[in-house]
Each structure stands twice: as structure tokens, then as C-alpha cells.
Amino acid sequence: MGNLGEALREELNCESALTIGGIGISESVVVTWIIMAVVLVLSLILTRNLKVEHPGKRQLLLEQAVTSLEGITEGILGPEGKQYAAYLTSVLLYLGIANLIGIFGFKPPTKDMNVTAALAIMSIILIEYAGIHRKGVKRWFKSFAEPIALIAPINVLELVIKPLSLCMRLFGNVLGAFVIMELIEYIVPVGVPVVFSMYFDIFDGLIQAYVFVFLTGLFMKEAME
Amino acid sequence: MLRLDINLLFTIINLLIWYLLIKKFLFKPVNNIIAKREEAIEGRYREAEQAKLEAGQQKEKYEALKNGIQDEKDQVMKKAQEDARAAYQQIVEEANRKAGQIIDDSKKTAELEHTKMVSRAEKEIRSLLFSAASEGMQKEENNSELYDKFLTKAGESEHAES
Image (cartoon, rainbow over the protein chains, first blue to last red):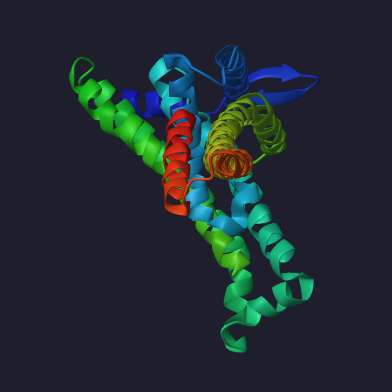
């Protein structure tokens, strides 16, 4: 079993993929670059020759995909938060791809806590920005003492708890799924992992992407009330 | 795996760039094209509505024109009838007048003829009387005989006259 532990530790370590000027750039950042490049090229190819009339199958599929993704986030945010929908949609797309990229042999970027922490920090900034933008600074400060002043400390604590829970939920789920998949692959390398991969890599990955975006959107909506 | 370092900052920068790229190169073109299509459909609906409206106006105009033609027709017919009636009246009056004139003329002619005849008869009677008188004076017959002779002569002359 010593072998298994060692192999796991090796897999779980986020190595610095390359070093530029003494700064170690982790694998997750590099994989994110790859995702960005691939999606950028794909969208450039797909959005070429878009037609107003008689769109082809490719265009219809693209339009359907984009509108349904935007529909998800717009549905969560409601009409007041429409200007934040584009960011949430882009995060949803990124997390979906990042969680699924394990299928192609990359290490999912979301397995690195730097990535989930970065996402959570951006989420809490956006949540509070939406609140301030909507209510004004004064009412935003007052909203900490709602519904009663007694729970103000808890509300302040939530500023930390919300992003921490977002960060850890995503990180833990992806890490857990990754560890389980590694264990299964270590024990039964053929056949069985495919079945479990369906759940842990594809289903769980997409669910976690949705949960992250859903919670961020929900918190934003709450902050804007 | 459980460490936070400079890569967190890199990831934030990456995410911001990712957001901008996706927004500019994927969402914007697709949403643009959808908006354009909606606009085109809207435009087509408006055009159809406009065409319908124009057709309605045209129809009304033609309807009015048709009614105008009918009115004009009625007017012309009425005028023609009136003209015809007037002409008829005039012709009848003219005819009446002419007939009256003819009757008058013939009356006058008849009167003239009558006067002429009377004057001729008078002349004849006068000449008869004259001849009877002269005869009587010559033969010295009695008065009754003379009277009979006169009557016979007058009857003869009357016969010859007609």
C-alpha cells in the first residue's frame, strides 16, 4: 500500500510546470492558458460567417448553446443583475471545461486550490460590488445589521465564510473525485474506471461548476435585495 | 495542493482575460446576430403591417372612386332625362303652335274664301236683279212670274257656282 500512497501524493502535487524568471508557474495556470487558447480559437472559427438569415446547423447549435448558458445565469440573477450574467456565464463555461478536462489527460485546474480560491475571491468581490452598486455605500453598511443588529458579527463573518465555502466546496469535490478515480484506476485499471469516470469526472464536474455559479448568483441576488 | 501562492494572482488575471475574451469573441457576435435577426423579423412584420394598411387605404380610395362614378352616372342620366323632357316639351309646344297657326291660317283662308264667295254671290244677285229688272221692264210681266224667273235663275247660278 505504500506504493499507492506515494503514487497518490505524486498525482495530487501541483507541480510548477515551468519557471519564468524564478517564478514557478503551476500546472493549473498552464492548463488554463491551454483552455483559453483552445476556446478562443474555437469561438473565432465558430463565429465566422454568422448569418442573419438561413443560419446553418453549426450556427444554430452555437446560438442554442450560448443562449442556454446565458439563460442559466440570467435565470439565477433575475432582471436586476443582468449586467453580471456575462461574467457568471464565462465562469460557468470555464469551470465546465476545467472540470471535464481530466478526460483529455490534463490535471483539472480546479484541483489546485489557487484556482478555486481565485474564483471565490472574485465571486465575493462581485457579490459585494453588486450590493454596493445597487444600494449605495450607506445602505450596504446598514445591511450588515439586518434583520437585527445582534447578528451583525455573523454577517461580517459571512464575507469570509461565503468565499471560503465556495472555494473549498469546489476544491474538495474535484479533489475527492480525482482521488477516488486514482484509487479505482490503481486497483482495477481496465473497464471499471470508465463507469465511475462517467459520474466523478463528467457528472460531478458539471454539477460543481453549476453549483459554484448558482451559489455566486444567489449571493449576488441576495446582496442586491 | 493546499498552498496559496503567486499562482492565485495569475489565475485571477487569467480569469479576467478569459472573461473579456469570451465576452468579445463568443457572446457578443452570437448575441449580435440574434439581435439582428430579431430586428429583421420585426422589420418584416412592420413592412407587412404597412403594406396591409396601404392596401386598405387603396381599397377605400377605389371604393370612393367607384361611388363617385355611380353618382356621376346617376347625375348624367338625370340631366339627360331632364334635357330630353325639355326637348320633348319644346317640340310638342312648337308643334302645337304650328298646328294652331295652320288652323288659324286655314280659318282665315276659309273666311276670306267665304267673304269672296259672298261678295261674288252678292255681285251675281245684283246682276240677276239688275237683269230681272231690266227684263221686267222690257216685257212687263206680272210680279209673280217675275219672282219665279228670278228664283230659277238664282238656282241655276247657284248650281253653276258649286
